[in-house]
Amino acid sequence: MSRDLDRLDADLGRLMEERLGIRGRSLAQQTRRAGRLLPRRIRRDLSLIDRWQDMRRHPKLHHIVDEAALRAAADRVAAHLRDIDPAERRKERLLGLAGVVSFNLIVVVALLLVVLGWRGFL
Image (tube, rainbow, N blue to C red; front, side, top):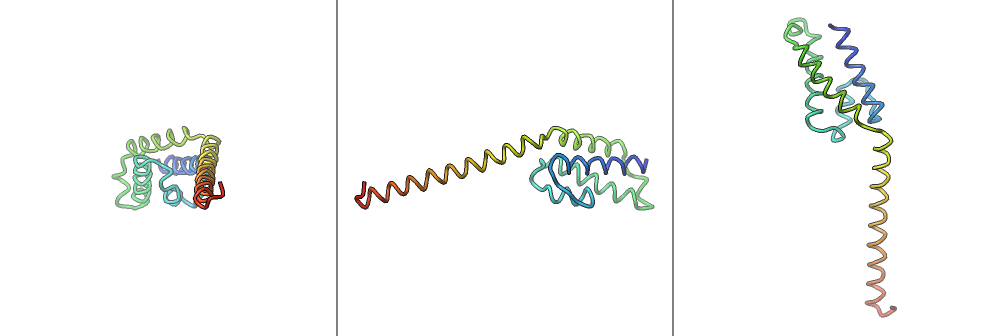
């Protein structure tokens, strides 16, 4: 059971690194760094996995770890991470940046035309 949970933790960490580009020493650190990139329900599942990982290492608490619930939470997180396409994320980020730059350029040109018209140069 312990090796399976360690492998599960490592697999989720690897998926976070591959799909979101977030590195860290542990899954908990990667979760903190991911922040708002992940939906609230996925962050909740990841914090649950982290708490259970801590409980599993405690000698008196390791008996109350619900392995089925832990695996279900890990499956939900893994399914969400597998659905993320890194190339699509890059493309959306670049398109968003291009949209912001073009909007700002339009606003600056419009203001320039307004000022030139107000001053009587147009």
